[in-house]
Length: 412
Image (tube, rainbow, N blue to C red; front, side):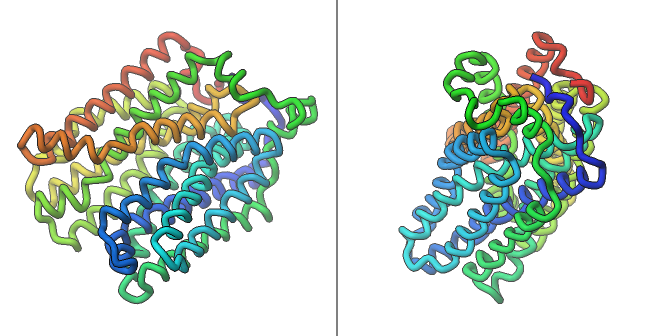
């Protein structure tokens, strides 16, 4: 299932592929997080409760697997480049239309449609980058691509500073600027050489295998990938969703300005972690790099939640995000190299988004666990993230033992 040794683009063009894929994922994530930062403002604008507006990010998460499947199948059939451009153009348009939504119902429908585009972008971008860069670049490129997610979070938090000037609708219009990444891809990024080679050999749209046939032939792999991505998403969402506003603000009474500073710092650490462990995976193998990052997460959990000083909370948050997003930095290369070639734009993205769908209940589970334990949110955060990290560690090491060839880095 390794990526074939098709002709590789020249290194300058390969750099454009890496930059474009990172830019697309970063701006996609930024548009998603803008909604989370402005939930109360949207609720006030539509004269409704915050709980009702929370349907917006929920609908986005629920529809992401649809996008992963539809866009992935289209990219496997008709090429990575046109589908990636179309996906980015669509989510940019939806972001702008959301700014002009006249009613809450229209807004929620648009956010559901946004989820389809959001779910499609990652898998298609992953297949394009992994099939286009030299094998020795894949670990680094994987880390850079995945670093786009915390970079998008960071960009959204900076754009949020403009809320008093632009309002939430103005921020959504700015989010539509993601179209620049589609233009960049159109002008500077060629089609995947691996996809072109397989198309020339007769493996294009006309002979694309059915997805159900692929699943039946690779049932164990599919179950493993979805289970692993569910654990990954419980690990990342468990450390992010409730941490800033609920844990830091309400339980630790950290001032808003300090929370903003901490968010910037731990997202910078997350970006660094993705790149560092992506590079490390090139040396020690994908699964072992993931296992190291997940294993390092476990002893850091008390430092992340138990301190009461802002300084030590910041140190803990930076360390935990460095490791968690470090593990995530290996995922694009890992899933691409595990994927059957005929569905490489579909399989990684669909596994990722199905795992994300399973983990969508994370915030509810953490709050209920905290209420049941009666000791605040800190133990619930440690237990949920720790269990998820342990599952990631066990699954990756188990697969490394059963399939040692998939632990290789640039030789995969």
